[in-house]
Amino acid sequence: MIEDYYPWGGEFTACSPKGCVAVVLLNIQYNPPESVAIYGRLKTENIGIEKIIANTISNPYIRFLILCGDDIRGHRSGASLLALHKNGIDHNHRIIEAPGAIPYIENLKEEAIKRFQAQLNVVDLIGEKEKEKIDEIIADCARKEPSSFGEPYIAIRIKPEATVSLTDKRALHSRIIFDYLGNVKKRGE
Amino acid sequence: MVDKEVPLVKAKKTMEKDVVLDPEGFFVIELDAKGIRTEYYSNVYKNKRIVSGRLEKVFVGTEADALSDSIALHVPCLRPEHYLYLGRELQKAQFAFEQKKRYVQGGC
Image (tube, rainbow over all chains, first blue to last red; front, side, top):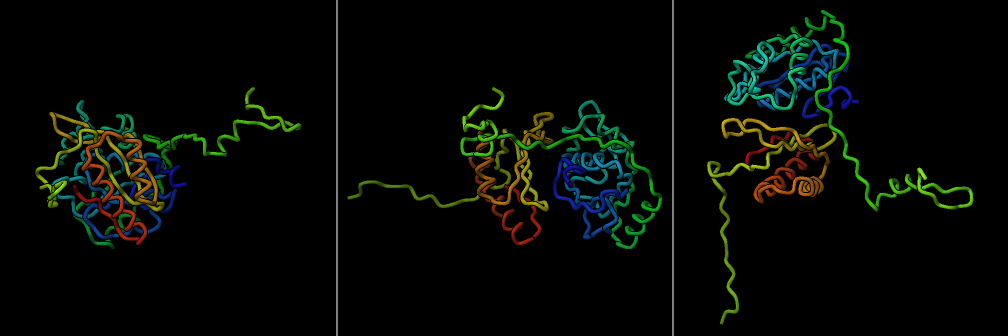
Protein backbone atom coordinates (compact mmCIF):
# COMPACT_ATOMS: atom_id res chain seq x y z
CA MET A 1 0.00 0.00 0.00
CA ILE A 2 2.74 2.46 1.01
CA GLU A 3 4.62 1.50 -2.17
CA ASP A 4 1.61 2.59 -4.24
CA TYR A 5 1.66 6.08 -2.78
CA TYR A 6 5.40 6.46 -2.30
CA PRO A 7 7.17 4.35 -4.93
CA TRP A 8 10.77 5.34 -4.23
CA GLY A 9 10.42 4.33 -0.59
CA GLY A 10 12.87 5.34 2.12
CA GLU A 11 13.04 6.41 5.71
CA PHE A 12 9.82 8.31 6.27
CA THR A 13 6.53 7.88 8.11
CA ALA A 14 3.35 7.55 6.06
CA CYS A 15 0.20 8.56 7.94
CA SER A 16 -3.06 9.62 6.31
CA PRO A 17 -2.97 8.72 2.58
CA LYS A 18 -5.43 11.47 1.66
CA GLY A 19 -3.85 14.10 3.89
CA CYS A 20 -2.87 17.27 2.02
CA VAL A 21 0.29 18.04 4.02
CA ALA A 22 3.80 16.61 3.86
CA VAL A 23 6.30 17.70 6.49
CA VAL A 24 10.05 17.91 5.94
CA LEU A 25 12.02 17.72 9.17
CA LEU A 26 15.40 19.43 9.14
CA ASN A 27 17.28 19.77 12.46
CA ILE A 28 14.32 19.24 14.74
CA GLN A 29 12.88 16.68 17.14
CA TYR A 30 9.20 16.76 16.26
CA ASN A 31 6.48 14.31 15.31
CA PRO A 32 3.72 15.88 13.21
CA PRO A 33 0.07 14.91 13.85
CA GLU A 34 -1.31 11.75 12.22
CA SER A 35 -3.48 13.87 9.92
CA VAL A 36 -0.50 14.63 7.65
CA ALA A 37 0.11 12.42 4.64
CA ILE A 38 3.79 11.82 5.20
CA TYR A 39 6.77 13.18 7.12
CA GLY A 40 10.46 12.50 7.20
CA ARG A 41 13.93 13.95 7.53
CA LEU A 42 15.84 15.76 4.81
CA LYS A 43 19.60 15.35 4.99
CA THR A 44 21.25 15.94 1.63
CA GLU A 45 20.71 18.62 -0.98
CA ASN A 46 20.86 16.18 -3.90
CA ILE A 47 19.40 12.68 -3.37
CA GLY A 48 17.46 13.75 -0.27
CA ILE A 49 15.61 16.41 -2.24
CA GLU A 50 14.99 14.02 -5.15
CA LYS A 51 13.33 11.52 -2.83
CA ILE A 52 11.04 14.17 -1.40
CA ILE A 53 9.95 15.22 -4.87
CA ALA A 54 9.37 11.64 -6.07
CA ASN A 55 7.52 10.68 -2.89
CA THR A 56 5.20 13.70 -2.92
CA ILE A 57 4.20 14.03 -6.58
CA SER A 58 3.24 10.34 -6.48
CA ASN A 59 0.40 11.22 -4.10
CA PRO A 60 -1.80 13.89 -5.73
CA TYR A 61 -3.60 14.56 -2.45
CA ILE A 62 -0.45 16.19 -1.06
CA ARG A 63 -0.67 19.91 -1.82
CA PHE A 64 1.44 21.47 0.94
CA LEU A 65 5.06 20.84 1.83
CA ILE A 66 6.09 22.30 5.17
CA LEU A 67 9.80 22.65 5.99
CA CYS A 68 10.63 23.08 9.65
CA GLY A 69 13.59 23.08 12.00
CA ASP A 70 17.04 24.56 11.57
CA ASP A 71 18.63 24.03 8.18
CA ILE A 72 21.31 21.37 7.75
CA ARG A 73 24.74 22.93 8.28
CA GLY A 74 26.93 22.79 5.20
CA HIS A 75 24.34 21.09 3.00
CA ARG A 76 21.71 23.85 3.38
CA SER A 77 19.23 21.21 2.18
CA GLY A 78 16.13 23.13 3.29
CA ALA A 79 17.11 26.33 1.49
CA SER A 80 18.13 24.28 -1.56
CA LEU A 81 14.67 22.68 -1.65
CA LEU A 82 13.07 26.12 -1.52
CA ALA A 83 15.35 27.24 -4.36
CA LEU A 84 14.34 24.23 -6.43
CA HIS A 85 10.66 24.97 -5.99
CA LYS A 86 11.20 28.62 -6.91
CA ASN A 87 13.80 28.39 -9.68
CA GLY A 88 14.09 24.81 -10.98
CA ILE A 89 17.39 23.48 -12.37
CA ASP A 90 19.85 24.70 -14.99
CA HIS A 91 21.22 22.80 -18.03
CA ASN A 92 23.84 21.23 -15.75
CA HIS A 93 21.09 19.82 -13.44
CA ARG A 94 22.16 22.19 -10.67
CA ILE A 95 19.40 23.79 -8.60
CA ILE A 96 19.40 27.46 -9.57
CA GLU A 97 20.59 29.71 -6.74
CA ALA A 98 20.73 26.85 -4.23
CA PRO A 99 23.11 27.57 -1.33
CA GLY A 100 24.08 23.91 -0.79
CA ALA A 101 27.48 22.56 -1.80
CA ILE A 102 26.31 19.94 -4.32
CA PRO A 103 22.65 20.63 -5.17
CA TYR A 104 22.35 18.46 -8.28
CA ILE A 105 19.20 16.68 -9.46
CA GLU A 106 20.22 13.60 -11.45
CA ASN A 107 17.46 11.02 -10.95
CA LEU A 108 14.43 13.04 -12.00
CA LYS A 109 13.29 14.46 -15.30
CA GLU A 110 12.56 18.16 -15.64
CA GLU A 111 8.89 17.24 -16.08
CA ALA A 112 8.87 15.79 -12.54
CA ILE A 113 10.29 19.04 -11.17
CA LYS A 114 7.65 21.06 -13.03
CA ARG A 115 4.98 18.80 -11.56
CA PHE A 116 6.46 19.37 -8.08
CA GLN A 117 6.37 23.13 -8.59
CA ALA A 118 2.76 22.99 -9.77
CA GLN A 119 1.35 20.48 -7.28
CA LEU A 120 3.01 21.62 -4.06
CA ASN A 121 2.76 24.86 -2.13
CA VAL A 122 5.93 25.09 -0.09
CA VAL A 123 5.60 26.57 3.39
CA ASP A 124 8.93 27.90 4.62
CA LEU A 125 9.22 27.36 8.37
CA ILE A 126 12.99 26.94 8.33
CA GLY A 127 14.26 27.96 11.76
CA GLU A 128 10.92 27.22 13.43
CA LYS A 129 11.15 24.51 16.10
CA GLU A 130 8.12 25.24 18.26
CA LYS A 131 5.68 22.32 18.13
CA GLU A 132 2.53 24.39 18.74
CA LYS A 133 3.40 26.83 15.95
CA ILE A 134 4.09 24.08 13.43
CA ASP A 135 0.94 22.16 14.45
CA GLU A 136 -1.07 25.34 13.89
CA ILE A 137 0.33 25.88 10.38
CA ILE A 138 -0.38 22.23 9.52
CA ALA A 139 -3.98 22.67 10.74
CA ASP A 140 -4.31 25.89 8.70
CA CYS A 141 -3.21 24.07 5.54
CA ALA A 142 -5.56 21.14 6.22
CA ARG A 143 -8.52 23.52 6.74
CA LYS A 144 -8.12 24.75 3.15
CA GLU A 145 -9.17 21.26 1.96
CA PRO A 146 -7.50 21.55 -1.44
CA SER A 147 -8.62 19.17 -4.16
CA SER A 148 -6.47 16.35 -5.46
CA PHE A 149 -4.01 17.34 -8.21
CA GLY A 150 -5.28 14.51 -10.41
CA GLU A 151 -3.27 11.51 -11.52
CA PRO A 152 -0.21 10.41 -9.53
CA TYR A 153 3.15 11.17 -11.15
CA ILE A 154 5.49 8.20 -10.79
CA ALA A 155 9.03 9.48 -11.26
CA ILE A 156 10.76 6.28 -10.14
CA ARG A 157 9.37 2.83 -9.59
CA ILE A 158 11.42 0.12 -7.88
CA LYS A 159 10.62 -3.06 -9.76
CA PRO A 160 11.19 -6.45 -8.07
CA GLU A 161 13.74 -8.47 -10.00
CA ALA A 162 12.30 -11.58 -11.69
CA THR A 163 14.51 -14.54 -10.88
CA VAL A 164 14.01 -18.22 -11.73
CA SER A 165 16.23 -20.89 -10.25
CA LEU A 166 16.16 -24.70 -10.40
CA THR A 167 15.30 -24.84 -6.73
CA ASP A 168 12.28 -22.61 -7.26
CA LYS A 169 9.58 -25.30 -7.50
CA ARG A 170 6.76 -22.85 -7.95
CA ALA A 171 8.42 -21.31 -10.97
CA LEU A 172 9.24 -24.73 -12.44
CA HIS A 173 5.70 -26.08 -11.94
CA SER A 174 4.20 -23.03 -13.53
CA ARG A 175 5.90 -24.06 -16.76
CA ILE A 176 4.51 -27.62 -16.95
CA ILE A 177 1.02 -29.02 -17.28
CA PHE A 178 -0.23 -32.51 -16.32
CA ASP A 179 -3.11 -33.82 -18.48
CA TYR A 180 -5.81 -36.26 -17.21
CA LEU A 181 -3.62 -39.29 -18.07
CA GLY A 182 -0.77 -37.89 -16.03
CA ASN A 183 1.29 -36.94 -19.08
CA VAL A 184 3.53 -33.91 -18.69
CA LYS A 185 3.48 -31.13 -21.22
CA LYS A 186 5.33 -27.83 -21.31
CA ARG A 187 3.01 -24.88 -20.99
CA GLY A 188 2.43 -23.20 -24.33
CA GLU A 189 3.05 -26.31 -26.45
CA MET B 1 64.84 -23.54 13.05
CA VAL B 2 61.81 -21.78 11.54
CA ASP B 3 60.07 -23.30 8.55
CA LYS B 4 58.00 -20.28 7.67
CA GLU B 5 57.64 -16.71 8.85
CA VAL B 6 54.26 -15.04 8.59
CA PRO B 7 53.88 -11.26 8.85
CA LEU B 8 51.95 -9.90 11.81
CA VAL B 9 50.09 -6.75 10.82
CA LYS B 10 48.93 -4.31 13.44
CA ALA B 11 45.52 -2.89 12.53
CA LYS B 12 45.45 0.77 11.61
CA LYS B 13 42.42 2.81 10.62
CA THR B 14 42.74 4.79 7.40
CA MET B 15 42.48 8.52 8.07
CA GLU B 16 39.34 10.08 6.62
CA LYS B 17 41.41 12.35 4.37
CA ASP B 18 43.12 9.29 2.88
CA VAL B 19 39.94 7.37 2.08
CA VAL B 20 39.64 6.74 -1.67
CA LEU B 21 36.07 7.08 -2.92
CA ASP B 22 34.94 4.09 -4.94
CA PRO B 23 34.73 4.86 -8.67
CA GLU B 24 31.98 2.22 -8.90
CA GLY B 25 29.62 4.27 -6.74
CA PHE B 26 28.17 4.47 -3.26
CA PHE B 27 25.38 3.12 -1.06
CA VAL B 28 22.70 4.75 1.04
CA ILE B 29 21.52 2.56 3.93
CA GLU B 30 18.27 3.35 5.70
CA LEU B 31 15.74 1.58 7.91
CA ASP B 32 12.09 1.55 6.98
CA ALA B 33 9.10 -0.23 8.52
CA LYS B 34 9.96 -3.53 6.81
CA GLY B 35 13.70 -3.71 7.31
CA ILE B 36 16.99 -2.48 5.92
CA ARG B 37 16.90 -0.64 2.64
CA THR B 38 20.16 -0.26 0.74
CA GLU B 39 20.27 1.87 -2.40
CA TYR B 40 23.17 1.59 -4.80
CA TYR B 41 24.12 4.66 -6.83
CA SER B 42 26.68 5.07 -9.58
CA ASN B 43 28.73 8.26 -9.23
CA VAL B 44 27.80 11.45 -11.02
CA TYR B 45 30.80 13.68 -11.64
CA LYS B 46 30.90 17.41 -12.36
CA ASN B 47 34.32 18.96 -12.92
CA LYS B 48 35.95 15.65 -11.88
CA ARG B 49 34.18 15.76 -8.50
CA ILE B 50 31.48 13.37 -7.28
CA VAL B 51 28.41 15.51 -6.73
CA SER B 52 25.60 12.95 -6.67
CA GLY B 53 24.59 9.50 -7.84
CA ARG B 54 22.26 7.73 -10.24
CA LEU B 55 20.05 5.13 -8.60
CA GLU B 56 20.97 1.74 -10.06
CA LYS B 57 19.64 -0.92 -7.67
CA VAL B 58 17.78 -1.23 -4.40
CA PHE B 59 18.39 -4.09 -1.96
CA VAL B 60 15.90 -4.85 0.80
CA GLY B 61 16.09 -7.34 3.64
CA THR B 62 16.37 -7.74 7.38
CA GLU B 63 19.63 -9.68 7.66
CA ALA B 64 23.07 -8.16 7.14
CA ASP B 65 24.50 -11.42 5.78
CA ALA B 66 21.80 -11.80 3.11
CA LEU B 67 22.16 -8.18 2.06
CA SER B 68 25.96 -8.48 1.94
CA ASP B 69 25.78 -11.60 -0.23
CA SER B 70 23.23 -10.04 -2.57
CA ILE B 71 25.25 -6.86 -2.94
CA ALA B 72 28.42 -8.84 -3.69
CA LEU B 73 26.52 -10.80 -6.34
CA HIS B 74 24.85 -7.83 -8.02
CA VAL B 75 27.56 -5.19 -7.65
CA PRO B 76 30.71 -7.19 -8.27
CA CYS B 77 33.51 -4.65 -8.79
CA LEU B 78 33.66 -2.52 -5.67
CA ARG B 79 36.89 -1.77 -3.84
CA PRO B 80 37.62 -4.38 -1.10
CA GLU B 81 37.44 -1.83 1.70
CA HIS B 82 34.05 -0.74 0.39
CA TYR B 83 32.64 -4.28 0.78
CA LEU B 84 34.05 -4.44 4.30
CA TYR B 85 32.55 -1.07 5.14
CA LEU B 86 29.15 -2.26 3.85
CA GLY B 87 29.36 -5.39 5.98
CA ARG B 88 30.02 -3.32 9.09
CA GLU B 89 27.27 -0.83 8.37
CA LEU B 90 24.70 -3.48 7.47
CA GLN B 91 25.41 -5.29 10.73
CA LYS B 92 24.85 -2.02 12.62
CA ALA B 93 21.65 -1.46 10.65
CA GLN B 94 20.42 -4.97 11.45
CA PHE B 95 21.12 -4.43 15.13
CA ALA B 96 19.24 -1.11 15.09
CA PHE B 97 16.30 -2.65 13.23
CA GLU B 98 16.06 -5.56 15.66
CA GLN B 99 16.38 -3.30 18.69
CA LYS B 100 13.96 -0.73 17.19
CA LYS B 101 16.61 1.97 17.49
CA ARG B 102 17.46 4.80 15.15
CA TYR B 103 20.18 4.04 12.60
CA VAL B 104 22.33 6.73 11.02
CA GLN B 105 24.72 5.57 8.33
CA GLY B 106 28.29 6.17 9.36
CA GLY B 107 31.24 7.32 7.30
CA CYS B 108 34.03 5.04 6.18
